[in-house]
Length: 450
Image 1: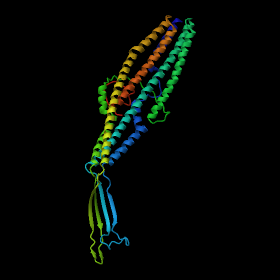
Image 2 (image 1 turned 90 degrees about the vertical axis):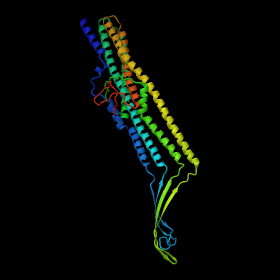
Image 3 (image 1 turned 120 degrees about the horizontal axis):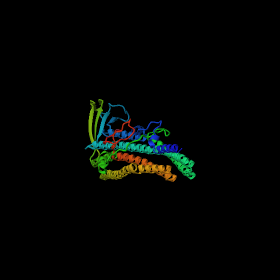
Image 4 (image 1 turned 90 degrees about the horizontal axis):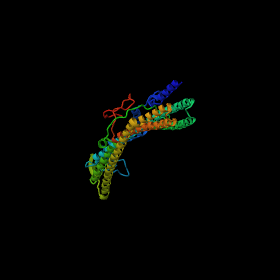
């Protein structure tokens, strides 16, 4: 009888220390791929497509800015007699006049307008790339949150099985006159708490699923599969180097730089508004011969050429235009400086969080969790030998559950901080991801095309 009890305890110990991943392996739905989710979001998200259409709209406007105003074509009946309005052979000044006129901005104004429109279009193009980074970050954060929730759900399932086994083990001890009914109540209370946590985690998963489907422009009820395990990459990060990369690669900075260049071109254009624009015209008059009384005119055709320009007589208007462009340039420059400053702060804070989480994960993996497992194992062995109380096993089991859950949260936060650094710098910090790889592995830095 004692031999059978020992076998039962050994089986319980094996189940207790069975890894969470082993309990969660048998899942019918294939694991989701992060890059596939990001690519789908970039291809389908309506807000991103709206930003793309806006960029194309301004790109078309930029092409229009390279052309001057359309020429004007004119037809008129000149010097016609009121009594006979369509008779051309009574007065030598009567005739049909055809004319063409063209307004031409001088002194590089057209080129500056084209430069302004092109820079504005470029700002929207880089704004589109910035929006892609933001969308990819939101998908990746939701992905790692879902991974943590799945891990915690599997951990809850495992803990519920362990509590059942502890109740069974206590029953075996009770049969031998060594157990207590109070222990069963304590274990039952912990089971109830676990069931409540399970409901909360299931609700969190549905909420994260809905968010992912929203980002990917899918039906809200679309099922999102489990998230595959990954290895935390051992990437060393440096705030100064990351800031240098951000200043060179970040689309938001390039967008603001384009707006600054637009404002600078606008300032030069405002200064040239003091110079006049020119209009060229050409007219050709068809005449008929006139023979009446003392007037003898052979009716030869005539032409005329014209040159006209506007008179910039209101200097106050031009001065206000220059002042407006100067303020716009200063505003764009200071906005660019402010964004650079905020990016530097965000990178520095994220790097600090990244390093803290990396050390926290290492501490939990190598210290806290193994020590908690050893503590529970020691209490289990002592309980079997009658040298420890059931409450020690129960408290140790719940503490181990808490530590494992905190480890999963720290790992997910670590990956989210890394994804945030990628968004802040505008470049890929992880090795290239492929569609057939379900985890992130460490290695040299590589750029991943989205």
